[in-house]
Length: 112
Length: 113
Image (tube, rainbow over all chains, first blue to last red):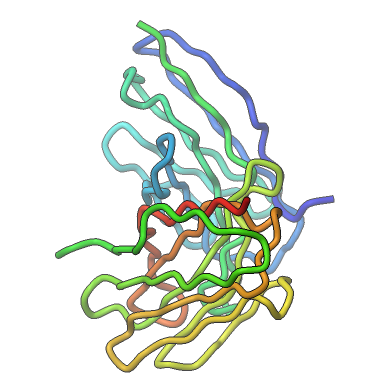
């Protein structure tokens, strides 16, 4: 079993929809949680960075972390065709340097 | 600030050859990490360097090695290339050893024939 599980999709939604992306993890030592967006043949782009449990909002994006359930989410409001990409969750322990453990990524397509 | 840069962007090598990839971190960032991305395994951590010292190592064979220079630029080397080494190699930089945000470069796409 992988340390971080993520539904690979693909997920197809109409423009303007609210998108919910999720990851579960098994390592309770994970303390830092990130969401990256990756367009085809590009490097991952950092979207959200959170520490421990709670919510964080940035524009149309909201990240939620529930450490008691070992579950993190990314919500995208008013989705746009330009949001079509692969979304990767990543996480890190407090004492493990900058080593990130990634989910497999969810492919999202926002259709007109 | 300029982002993380990686050179070359594309590379084609033959089995048995060796290859060196280069990464220049964001100015002021002292931590550089390397990852391998393949369709089957996703993104996997290779190693991390901070202040010219390897701080973390992933579960890859010894054919994969790296180093960091005093200006924080980093190189990774893969010797005796195998077909399975074909992948996108990504470099990420962070200002701190831990707790900082990591920013990725565009990657080097390596094809081994």
